[in-house]
Length: 394
Image (cartoon, rainbow, N blue to C red; front, side, top):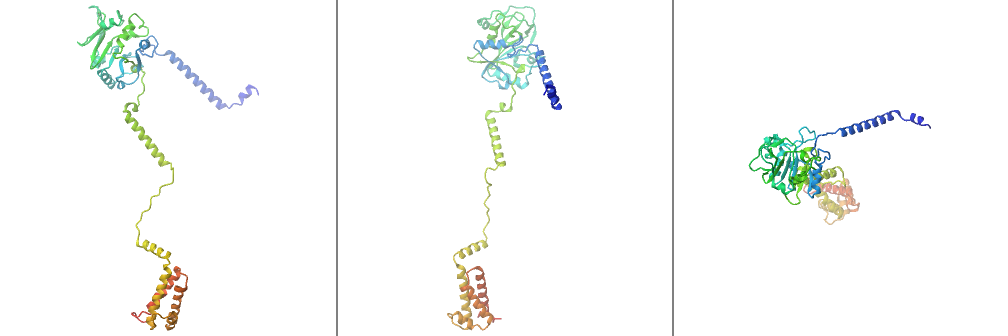
């Protein structure tokens, strides 16, 4: 079979669907590749970004000098005492990847710093400063040189001798408890101040520690001096939340662990109960029927007991003996007269026949319910006929 003949035998509808699906997948792959190539070119200030505008060199430099460094990718409510220094780099306002902090996030961040954390804030946000967030100072344009440059002694001890800045902004004002770390004579560029039991270090220039800038003289020493942990083995963490790297928070991450465990245990118990109700693993349990016993039940039980003991024959014989004594008294015979003598003394043929039948049923008949009933009935009739205290027989 030739190739063309094989193609003609293919189902047309299925082949068309397959070709369209392949074409759509190829178009999507091409579009995705172009989108990745076109990607944003603005500085991200993210420790994940190896491009010129990222902070990955800063992150790797801290790790190479022995600092325990990691990334924080959750809401500020999850900040804890394990983090010594949190590096927060303010993203550009027009960066679509930026994730703004809510009022609750800012409150959680301030609470963490007040509890003893160290926040290295790089950038500026006048709106936050006007609202008193973290007591940040307000920025202004750099003025003409008015005084000598200032470099804090702790920076000089760290080997920092000269740091250049390219930003035109300076901190406008600072409080009496602010300590100036760097001032080039045109205004302060880096300050530090206490905030509760913690501390905030504010650096006005985000670009100074970019991947393409941190290799300049004294920049790496300056970065280490600002971010170094204040406690031995302290963790330095880069806050990646404002740059769009955030781990989704689920309800079981928020509630206390014991409560979450209790919820899952309760759900498991409910599922087991539902499975037990839907699937029968054994025979059904029939409840014991409870009913009160009546007098009829007692009589039946007692009669059954008597029947087992042979009381049927005794009852029939007693009935015949009692009737015979009554007939003997009525006809004038003695109490110990024989049955034949008593029968001969009865003057009515029907009663004489009944008497003999009674004797047959009670004395000679089989001891069953029928003979017992017949014998007792005949004995009762004869007693009534020959009763001395009743009216004469019919």
